[in-house]
Length: 387
Length: 198
Image 1: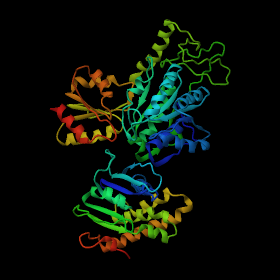
Image 2: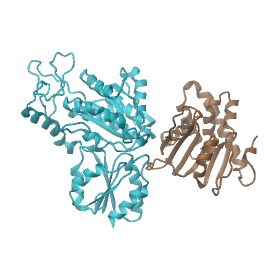
Image 3: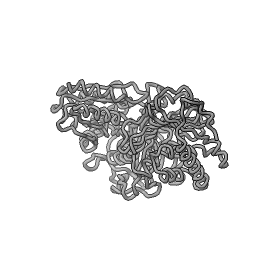
Image 4: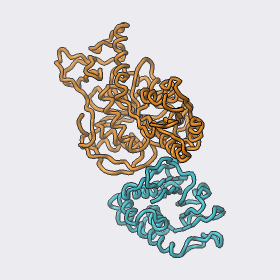
């Protein structure tokens, strides 16, 4: 780990919305390139980046569409910079092909998805949390990614930095899964001094040029090192199944070796990657699982339930992917049940059910999006499960 | 500061969002409280309905939206028609006196205060600062945030070249508020509030 480049770090307390805070997080993390096809409610992230770019030696390109935006950032990464793009549902759908390409080529990059109501054009200015399965399964083939869910502008800042760090460490695309409420909500955001911000640098190789293999895994993370463009290393990057040299090799043996490593580098490190926030889980009868803006609404419901004498704990998913199976599995035998609240009609609840494996009840409080839950809806589910 | 839910609304171009932002900044950055601001978006850049919701609290804010407001600042008739019925009983309504006709409000014990903020801003030389006049008036009427904290948040939010003008606008609104408070809240039962002019 190293520290943030002081250029562009706006140390101090600000009153910012989540979109602007995410932009500042990207800048602190060292992002110096963004390509985008701005879409509500994510536009403000790149609007701010385009204003800030000339002052910090960065580049922003408004592309012709989301396909172009999502592939331009991958090119920029191989050119040597840290890069990201932002979008919302309709654009996210168009980016799926290049998310697969980023996974296959192990290109460290960050996608910020400010979720709005869907399917299709849906609700441009209103919230949802309904891209949670798409982010994991939207591109074809077997793969693993990392997805983080901020619940405040401060976390939009903090977790965007975290996303860049994880992407460099594991060489995967990392997703900041915001929602319209968090993106457009304005709160105090504290930006620390540059030397207090930990940054995972790009791991450029110093290996011998004649024997360096672009896709030979290194260390516990099972991730290869990157070659710095212009340093004289031989670089061959392809979306085809490739061997350690990066050369296409479309045999079952290489496919098995390569795809397994793409998956296990995340699965084997899942407990290290996963962040959850747990509160009063010990001795609880009911545990409420939520993430993003819903975690705040759920907290109000939990406080109402506790005022009625119910023993309620909470698990907030800060990392949605990889899913923290181990956390849910450990709690399941000790409680009457889980209540899962989310702004969709049943997505992460499936992961909770899978991890619970029949050991307790799981109740879902879904919502089609457009606004947040009424705390009373979540309270009702808590009371039912506690009964 | 106690948990207070506010709505500030008017038409686009009046500085509605900035007014809410200044109050939020004062509460959460200049002072040590918490503030969460959300805003309603319309496709219009100017002239359309514009509304901000602000929750001020001594502890972190959980629920971000305002359903019933303790205090409303309404700067257009459209905003009044749309939102005034969502003031809590016993709540406070602050209006732009020349732009809002307070009528048909049947919520018990609402205290109404009016200020010709646009006219005061024009007298100061720039109509644009009407939101800062309104911010000062809000500060004096609500007494939620200290006069100095709110003033600092105003000055932190405007370009340095306009600090003097905005400082004057804030003070004018605050002084008008102090004067108005002494004369008491508007009594809705007796007369048409539009007649309350200097």
